[in-house]
Image 1: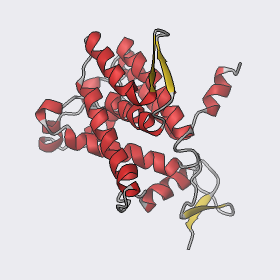
Image 2 (image 1 turned 30 degrees about the horizontal axis):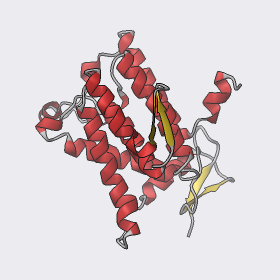
Image 3 (image 1 turned 90 degrees about the vertical axis):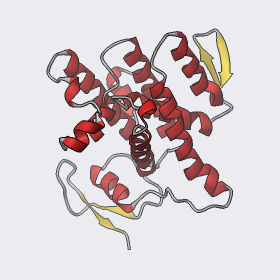
Length: 240
């Protein structure tokens, strides 16, 4: 069995970083170091008081420490990791772009009053679960050791469980909508002969290269080992 340190180091970079930020945010709120109302998403405060940071900070909050938070965090640790290590193996920039596109989609859908939710972290995690379920639809998943279902049905099973336990359903629905939009545009539409309109932008490749974590096959940005940047001791150049 691996130690906690070994397990942490084995985690893929984007999921690990996102999970750490989510855990730190909820911990800061629990210790009263941060008031959650300053990071939640309220469009009127964004538009009228220019509190634009809310468009970003709300994604790093999975809710206060609770069973709901624990289930979402475990969902991220399980299926977010499987997705980044599986379908997005050696595609760190593509995985990060998937999350960015998902966040932007959620912000747009959240403008609809019926779909507004003050924090989108659970929705972003549920989006990862949905994309994973479409990538490995025939995988066998056991729910509490009682029922075994195919992976493609897991998001819907989780939605039913949230309904049974009276958890909010809007974050799940938002995650399914954003996940399906991404999967359609990035996978289904190109497979049917359409253009890949969700190609990872160059600036995302540069960001991942500058970060120095993970790997990206066929990246247009390559590391330059003879120069340095803060924290990593190396810089990056555009491959021409």
